[in-house]
Image 1 (cartoon, rainbow, N blue to C red):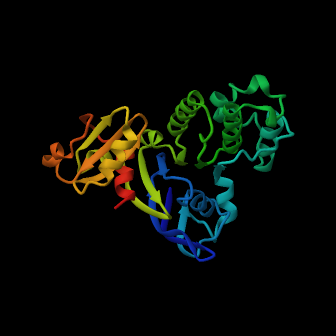
Image 2: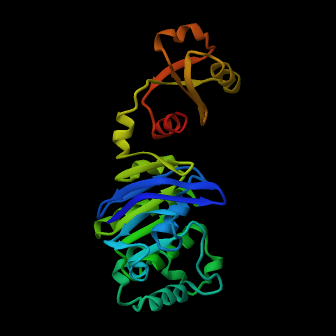
Image 3: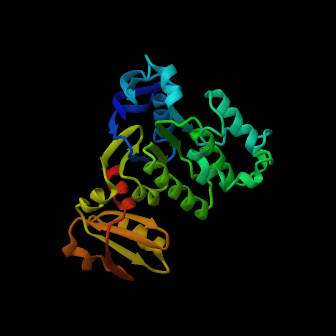
Length: 291
């Protein structure tokens, strides 16, 4: 459904994307996982025909993003990271406008957005600028779906949204997948990676790995230990100075430590409990990003 081949792009001498290649299968939820500035939005803009790459090719729904850009724009739905609907128009006016642009009506494709739109329909006469973050998110998704796209591009759709709305949003994506819609979603949140069928870790414009999240975790080659103490910062500095420590990072109230040689743990004289834990998707990303 989506195929990117050796895509590269430079901004004023800075490499935004470096030889990016991947495929997204039909009906798949594919996650592009990485921090701000990793190149996620730039890649989305190329795949949705809003930006030309310096080199490489891309195919979306069987069409070339350069040669067939007009047709592609009728077949994809795009939800950018920033809320980009008309703030002064009501919920219903925004949805009606986007339906008209694509030559359809709300009534014709209401079944596509019913589960989502019903949650904000009681506020259909409220201006979009007066909606909460979660409601804006649902309206933007409804507008991206109203013309029945084959592919849905969602650029950091849950950034700045409360945890309940984030959970609801991903439940909506699962239902859209059941309707046969292919979804490419980017996010800086590692916990959302496990909700995708496959993920690509991206860092500084380069893809680090592509696999199902459970396989990435299963293939993690090191043992991970958690440290919880009142003086985590002091222990963090101590471990980062140790030659026997491969990596140590702060994760909430604990530290995650990977040793070069597990047999030498006792020599570290850590004044806190060390407990072996299962690696997380964050551990995998940090290890790949720091190789």
